[in-house]
Image (cartoon, rainbow, N blue to C red; front, top):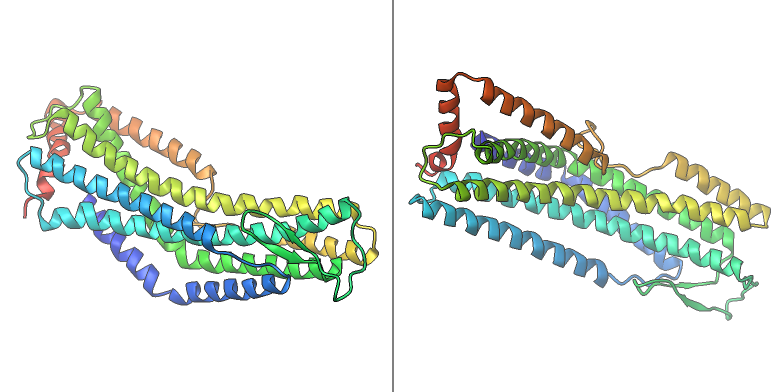
Length: 349
């Protein structure tokens, strides 16, 4: 089962990454256009913070993959098994491709999150100016620089509020367009990763529970501790992949939702009819343009996915454990032996 899922998973991820490559190119082009508009607002963009985040995330995922690979080889060595080509394809290449696709998606969502932060800081700066009643008519020579946040962004207060709000609306539309285009590129990759992760987590959890509950009559070279450790580590690795995907998507969605509160706070303090009209247009835009990530349109990728996976996982585990308990002794013994010798089978050439 794992050999088939590994082969199909790697094939789908490769094809879905190569064939629709125009989507990621278009999305990066939109981000570049967005950065130019942010510079026109007087924002100096420093990419060091998001770059450090991506490097740290990349390093942590590589460390997790290397630790899992070394641990798997160690478990096989204790059972006097030599890793074969099939083992390499099943337990190394598949996990590496899945984790790297997860890394690319998480880094992309971090880029979108940073753009939302910059756009919202422009609006917050406008709100603080209204709050302190320091907005004045500023000529070309009367420009003030005001620090916004930890991204070291600065805005030049040289435009009237209507122009700032209009450009913020355009930036918000570009962010939503970039997110929608990126979702078209990643959608089948995410569906494949989450599907493979769910299947592996279900069967790994079943093997572990069956062994710990004493329902497995194993005849294997591997000790119980080694058997449980191997499948538990594999399960944790795919849990990390799911959590990384969901949290990356959720951060962008939550960050985008904060824009509405800022816009309505500005609307409550606006005095000029032209500014109020622009803010009402922005509010309508926020109502119709929302960030969302889906897996081929089948389900949304947000924190509700945790509950869905947990419920399905519990259901399938109960069914599998009940099937094992109610099976005839001969069938139960055969299934237990088949499960316990899965590692040894894939090592044979």
